[in-house]
Every structure is written in structure tokens, then in C-alpha cells.
Length: 417
Length: 215
Image (cartoon, rainbow over all chains, first blue to last red; front, side):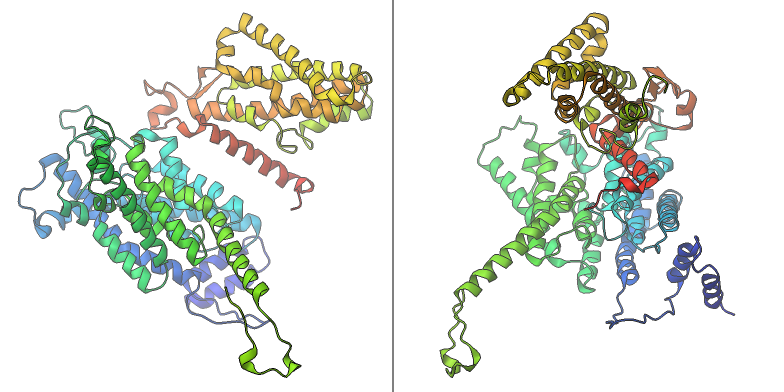
């Protein structure tokens, strides 16, 4: 008997018992269940929740691999200085870099999945419902949006908090108001701020070496700008991601590819992505204009970030990552098409605004998305109400002629507004 | 409960659990969020409310037949304000540091919804003894939640209890801190109190499903 058969047998054995959801979950995780539904009519489609989730994970794999190389690259560059004639094969895609990536990034992934799925299993058993696949994407997003040196126990605490308070108390997958991955990030940010900002946590080993003669540091671009410091990264470094930052957020190029993949597989909403990009560009342009018109002096603490070319906001920090993988979360985002435009636009707009105006939060994108998560139902409500109102008005103005009145079709005049 | 009849005892016991002012009636949330970052402050706040509500309920109950109903809110306010000023002055005289920590929130006991709520809902319609018991019961119920929240917020947020380090020294890295543990800065922030209160509400309702509101 194959594994599938055995799993099926176990599942039958535990049917109706307390642990049933746990075994069912294992079964559905590995195979598609061989049960059929018996009542009502059903539409059979291939993209169930599991496939949707897996598509997003596929879009995240290049980012994850890149982040492993980048972890090593940032570590060695901080020690030996950045290579003069940078060549991709010689300096970046090396085994040394990858090895550092494996020993630093993989534990984050394992802890994120282990703890998160553990909590999900626990709740499924206690509440007696089936385990949902909702954590598959969250578990992959979490290690990509934290600094590389985040202690694993902190990640554990944050994941438990994020899954329980951010998701399970609202009723589990599909019922949450806030994006669980961002809830975890926000919890870490407010609970352990020293581990989430500064110039030590973004490069592997910088925390351990602090205070020794070998001390190294690596400030993110936004962090340097918020403090008015110079940075030496070129635009192509920023675009391709050879800069320090949270594990997976650095490479705008790969995130762009992932975003295109998600759009073409129709998993993520292109409306949200496009409008968020527009929103951030508009805000960036407004700030550039303020500087150009001379409304702000060079000595102002906002000058550095306001003077930053508007389009560069998209390739530094986590804005691109947030727009592509977080803002498009189908559960917490707006549902109506018009609502998606408003929702996405405000995410981009607010992200750049927080970046510039609040030096304590050099990265505002997670706050902007969480805020708009909260507003998404309100936006949808007004979009739907507006639609209802418009159609009611149209109906009021329509002249309805009874069917057997003998008039011709041309005389059936319907006024539309 | 020898001195209390069964009915009177319920006045004290109900607010402690199934009719808790914070978790069931959802009153007095503002002060529960504001001052529970330290355990000592929570206890002082609980005692202050105990004093104000216990005596206030008796005073209102004694005057209940002579207060014209049109101006009853003003009369109630004057009673609370008087009592709160007494509390404030006592704190300033004997516990100045604490009174600085509590700052404006002692004065804001006046606006604590529990107090006006009990005046309106109970003291105006019941005798002094029963009103007194009701006041004590409700402020104890309020205090219990405050102390639970204060305990967790101070322990996890600052690693101290009553200002004494119990988990080791955070700067010298002794005790638990030697293993890499760090204080959770989030617990110091007011939203953490909201979440702790939420968890208490969750636990209480899952223990006693009869409390779950229909919506």
C-alpha cells in the first residue's frame, strides 16, 4: 500500500476523534483528498486555496535564493570592503555567500513555518475544524521581511502573537482583518526596536562583533538618509538588490519578476500593484516639487528624503516587496475593483509619506499596509453603496411599460443616467 | 458569609466574575489602558476607585430621594469630584512619586464610566448598605482586571514587579537576560493593555459560553 493509502486509512481511523483535523491536514497537504461532495451543485475549478498559496510561494523562491546569496555578500563586503570591479559570478554567486545564507536564512524559515503551523494545528484540534492552508504564504513571507540577525526566540514569540492575535481570534484563515505576516513584523518592530533598526542588524554577525576591533556595520539606504548620512550604493545596486536590508526585500528586480508572474497567473490583483506604484510616485513627485520650489530649506531634517528622486522610492527599502506580496493579500485587501484602486493608491501614498516625515520609522510601508487593511472594508462599503445608489437612481428614472400594452419596442424608452 | 445574606453576597461576587465591569460591561477601559504599565500604579488606582465608588455609592444612595432627577448628573459629579480630590490630595501627601506616575488619571477617575454607571444604575434605586456592597464589588472587579493586566505588562515589559527586577538585570545581563532574553517594549505601550484585556475576555468567555454576546 502506498503512502497515500496509508494516510487515508489513518484518516478513516481517526474520523470523529479529537486529533482528526491534524491527520486530515497531513493528508491534504501531500495529496488531493479523494472524497467527493454529495449535496448541491458544485463548480469544479483547479485553483483551490492550496494552489493559490503555492503559486505565491513559487513567486517568492527567487527572492529567497537571492537573499541567501545577498546575506553572505553583505557579510563579506562589510568585512573586506565592497569589491572594486563587481562581477556577478565572482563576487555574488559564490558558495561562501550561499553557505552563510543557508546557515542564517534557513533557520528563520524553519522557525517561521514550524511555529506558525504548530499554532495552526493546535487551534484546529482545539476548535475541531480543518487545518487551513493560510499559513503557507505567511510562513514564507515572515523570514523575508525581518532583519537577518533577528534572534530565533523573538521570531517565535512574534509568530505566535501574529497567528493567534492577528488571525485565529478572528476565526482563522480568510477572516483576519490584518495581514498576519505584517502583524508579526509590526509586533517585532514595537516589541524589540533595537533589533529592528539601526546599523547592526542588517548584516550577519554585526551584532556579535559590535564593540570589538573587527566591528562591522551596514545601514540600510533609508536608514542612512533618515539620519542625513551619505551612502555609496549606485542605482543599479538598489535595483538589483546588492544592498543591506531585511532578508528578502532588497532586490526590486526579482520582486518585479515575481509580481509579473503573480499578475499573469491571475493570483494577485494588478490594480492594487499599479495603483500603489502610482500612489508612491505621486507622493514622491509632490515632495520633489516642494524642494524644487524652495519651500523647504537645506537645513531641514526632511530635506534629504524629500530631495530623493521620486522613482527611487520604489527600489529602496521594502516598498516593492510590500506592494507585490503584502498589499495584494486577497483576504485583507479591498475586494471591489474601484476599491482596489483607492486601497492601492493610498498604500503607496502613505508609505512614502511615512518614510519622509517620520525619521523614527525609516520604513513606513508595513504601517501603511496595516492601516489600509483596517480601512479596506470601509472602502468596499462605500464603493458598493455608491453603486447601489447609482443603480437606484437609474431605476427611478426608467419608464417601465407593461408587456401587453401593445406598444412597439422602439417606444420602450428607458432613461439611463 | 455570615453577615451577608445570599442576595447581598452576590452584589460583591458577581462583578468579580460574570458581571465584571471591564470584561463584561466594558466600562472603565480608558484607565485600564493608561495606567497598567506598572503593577503598583494599577493597585493604587484600584484602591482609589474602591474608595471613591464605595463612599460615593453610599452618599448618592442616602440622597437618592431628595435629588431632583433633572439635576442628578450634576449632583453625582460633585460627589465624585469631592471624593477624587480627597484621593488626589492624599496621594500627593503620602505617595508623591506614584501620584506623578498616575498624573492626570487620578483626576480622570471622575470620568470613569464605572462610577457614574453604578450611581445611575444602582445607587439611585437602592438603600445605602446594598449600594455600598455594590460599589465595593464593582471596584474590586475593576481592580482585579487592573492588577492582572498590570502584572503581565510590568513583568514582560520591564522585567520588574513593584519596581523590583525579578528576571535579572537587563543592563548587566544577569539572570534570564544572560540567555539573550529581552524586555518586550510592546507591553509598555497602551495597545498592549488592550490586547491583554482582550485575552482575558477571550479566556473568560470560552470558560463560560453563557457570557458570549449574540450579535
